Length: 147
Image (tube, rainbow, N blue to C red; front, side, top):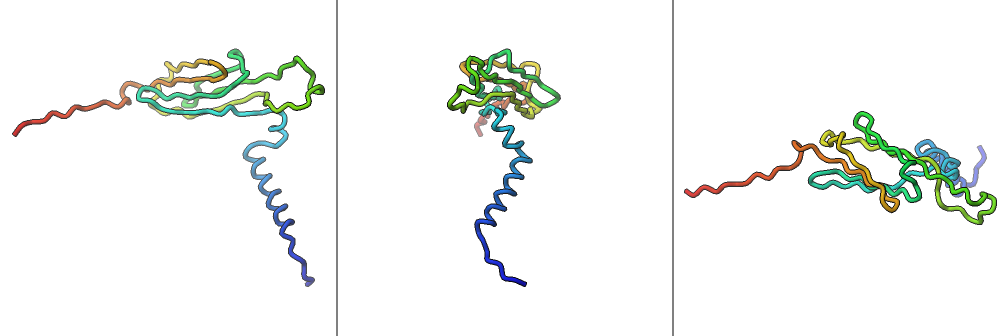
C-alpha cells in the first residue's frame, strides 16, 4: 500500500461540496436564488388582543399580493415584478430581487379566522389576527376578608 500525502484543502473542498448539496436540497438550487426567487422577512408579535404579522414587501403592489386561510394555515403569496423601463443588458448592476414569493404560518386555535385584517403601507404588509374572547387573559380580583 502506497503512502499518500494528506491534503487538508482537498478535505475542505469535499466538505464544501457536501454542504452545498445539503443547502440545495433544503433551500432550492443556487439558480433559483440568482433568478430572483425571494422570501419577504417578517416580524410576528403578540399583544393582549391579537397576533400581528408584519412582512416587508417593498415595491409589491396590493393587487400582486394574495392572503388566504387554508385550514389552520395563513398563506401569503405575491410577486415583485421586474421594472421594464430598461433592458437587462443595459444594467451595470442589478441587486434588487424580483419574482414570486410565498410564506405560510400555522395559526393558533385562539385566532378568529373570519376577522383577520390586512393593510399595506410604505412597503410593509401588516396582518392583524384577533384573538377569540374566551382565550384572552382575564384578571381576577382578590377580596381581602378581615378576621
